[in-house]
Image (tube, rainbow, N blue to C red; front, side):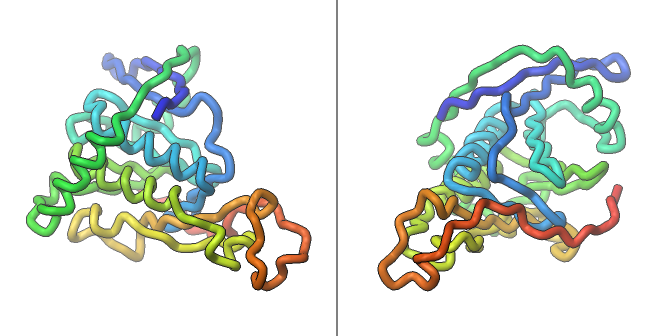
Length: 232
């Protein structure tokens, strides 16, 4: 997959960081309540690509603005950044340069398969470590666990919405989550990434027996937010 990004090289406390984020916002994609990540085919496919890119970019932070909340992805060997310093670094993301990157789906699938074989025995340092600050969820982990997360998004992106009348009507459908990739002792009630598919009904082909098939299609709506206080 080819990803059109912007690359930044901000300096903070005498250190240079490499930060990459999408050149344009991911449309129809939202992360809410530290729990639900919702997108359509295009949005979930791009998220798969950015998780894959993070897996093989050990010296890069991947910044994904997703509406109410942001994601920052990093390899476990990525430059150490205190989450409390993120707002200051984010303000320095100016004057970036266009950069197109390419991901390797076969390599990503192979590393995801390796993770599936050994995730029950994986050490915590290899799993996704979540941290929260300033309306941003930080996820860092090994190459294999990031590749596994990428494949979960790829699977959700390939969901066949034509088989589900509720999705045709514009409702979101839970597909997967990153529970298996997270550290063993993290607080599931505090932070989760549950992956939902929500298509664009105006582009779906209604099933013959789909309830409400004759109704006007409703535009994509971000999930309603149950606001919670920002944690550090």
